[in-house]
Image (cartoon, rainbow, N blue to C red):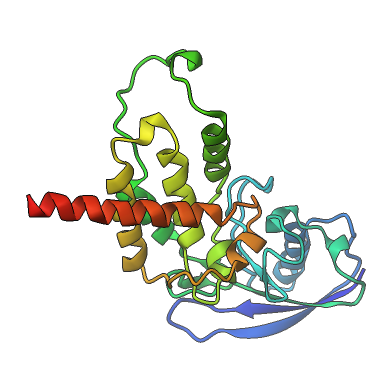
Length: 252
C-alpha cells in the first residue's frame, strides 16, 4: 500500500507549526498505525532529517499515550486506540492527515506530542479514597450491587487518552472527569469523599481551561473504551447535591 502522509510538524510550543507531506510506499495492511510511523521515522533518520515526535508506550491499547487526530477523527476511523488501528482501515494511495490533540488545555510540546498533565492535576485534586491500608479484605465481606460494580468497572476502564477532549467542539473534559468521579463514587470505599471529590475535580477541570459540556456526544463516540455519557449525567447529579451540601454547611 502507498500513502501520502500530511503530518503536523512543530519544533516547540513557542514556534509556529505547519503540515508537511511525506510519501510512504510498501506499507503492509497488517501494520499498526504507529508501526507505519516508525517506518517513516526510520526513513527520515536515514536521510538525516528530524524524526516525527509522537507519544506511545504500551502499544496494547492500555496506556492511553498514543493520542493522534487522524483525518479529523480522534484515534482515526475505528473506535479504538491509535496503536490498535491498522493500515487496512485505509485505502491504497489515500492521503492521511495526522495532527495532535487540539485543545487549549493540551498545549503542543513538539510535532504530535501534547502536554496532558492537566489530566493528572484533575485526578490529584480528588481521585483518592481515605480507606485504611493494610491486608486485602475478603471480597465477600463488602457486598456491592452488581449494577454498581459493573458501572464502576466501566468508569475505571478510562485510560486518560484525551480523545474525548480532542473530539469535543468545546474541548470539554467532562467524560474523563465523570469517569474518574464515577468509578469511585459508585463503590462503598469512595463514599467518604464522594461530594468533596466532585467539587474538587470539577473545579480543577475548569481551572485547567477545558470547555463546557453541551451534550454533543462526540466524546463517547470516539472513546476507545466506549465509556457512556451516563457518567456525565451522574456526575452532574452529584455536583448539584454537593453544592447543596456545601451551602447548608456554610449556613451553619
